[in-house]
Amino acid sequence: MDKSHYVYILLTERNTLYCGYTDDVEKRFKQHLEGKGAKYTRANKPVKLVYQRSFDTKQEALKEEYRIKHKLTRTQKLELINSQ
Image 1 (cartoon, helix red, strand yellow):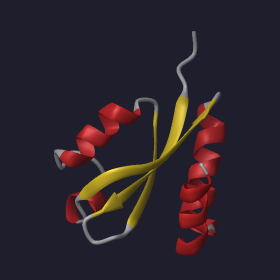
Image 2 (cartoon, rainbow, N blue to C red):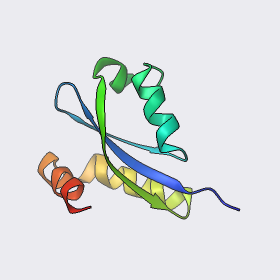
Image 3 (tube, one colour):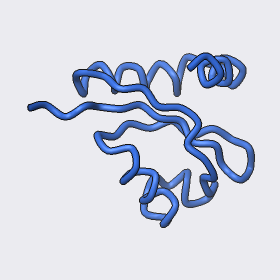
Image 4 (cartoon, rainbow, N blue to C red):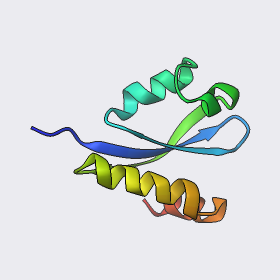
């Protein structure tokens, strides 16, 4: 059985948004909290998981992660978060 693949967005202490990819959201969030996640979240401590969406393939998830990170404005990201 294939694993699900996820795109997620975290809200940080500095009120910034961080978008990432994982196959285990809870485990990845814990890594971010422990300072073992991305360089960005070591400097900007996450406080809350505000968005997650599952995909059938890693390729689909990574494509969506890229779209969120590089194509959406902060306002558009907040709209995405509020639409779920």
